[in-house]
Image (cartoon, rainbow over all chains, first blue to last red; front, side, top):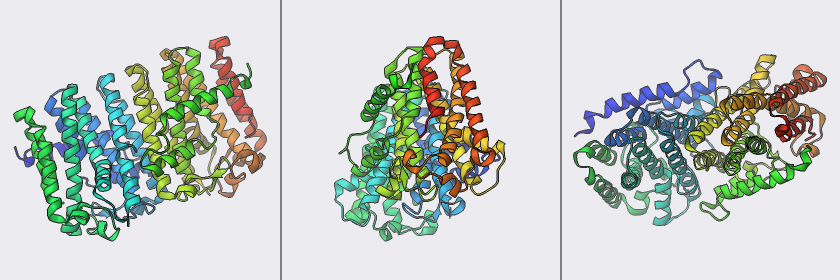
Length: 293
Length: 293
């Protein structure tokens, strides 16, 4: 199974889902909906929703429900990028090759657009066509993954606080696992629950998600120093100029590549249980670790 | 029934609930949890959670579940205040007589603390001890009330956009009903669902909540011009200096007082159905309209 066999089709499914979830252009108040749509449709790779969707498909039940959950995950990811790019945080002008949300709509609207996307994500999850007992489990998992205790916001805080300081491997691991791996793991776990997975399956997919999410961020660090801005669609070398805590800075590029490969192996091991049914997730995992942008 | 008979006891219940919901001091990352706790425990009146809790008590079932929902509502209210006070929005230095969150912790941490409280609110709702089918309804109601389409963020956007402009009564009504009434209505509806209300009860309480929430904001406008900063715990006259759209600015104080009284009457009418069981909600409603701070 090659990623090219299904990635574009999956992306089209995700675009369709997001189009249904976001209030259409022209819904008042006009500006906030324009700002929300601007960042959601700015050309993201849809990594989290596709992982969510493909995990659900592996268990085979209720793809309609999983598509809604996948869309909600992308809204949370987008909100985190909008807030992260603000002048008070990373102060980024460019994202996916386009002006960041606050450069287009101003700081106030960017703050509110992020808030609104996070809120809409939970509204979407609450209304997803999935049996209520599974729906509340999904919401709890996603909220924890996006939160402060070993979750995304906790990772962002630790990242902000580590800037310009010399940190050790333990802190760096905490930042990467919280800031990035948690939401990717959350997307995969949510997909498993939506798809009707047993508790044992959910725990297996949790380990898969944690490792592949962590590898994803290590690779992101590597690309920031090894690829030009034109390939990344964002300012390359930014980590270094902002004195961010990264794997290449702490371990060098070669050792970082090795760490990413080991995490990929640990992730893929969890899929052995599923044989051929795991082919798409296996292809996705490899794509995420071997990508160039 | 007088408000003094139960208000302090209810507040103590809410403080206890919030104490259980917020990660304790010393939970890493330290700063974000300190920032979250700072604003949650800065002396709010707990209007929304008490309305939620007392609505649930009127229907008599599952007070434990309602207490968790009530706490989540207060987290959402607190997040909205933190973000609203930011320099990019209202740029307020003082809230409840204390420095605002960003004055204490910086803009970055205040943005993240707001994000974290919103996320924690949904995690709390998702884990509340309420049957799953009611739990997902509560989450959907609360998220819609906090969102952009006739919800809290929509109201904030319209408020920001109306600043300094001359607006009509229709726009002012939209701002107040979205910015303030929606979440108060959401708190009351959520309490009704948590307490085991029938659909007909939920709709009655929805009308009660909408009217009392709207009245609450009209009274807020009036107090801003009629009471000193010392009574309000925030900068009095701020609406006027920021050229905010308010009822007194559009209709004058006397007419505004009359509008608030009419809304209160419309709200109380919904409680007739409940006779003596509605005594506490009736007392709360009158307290909210007749308050001086």
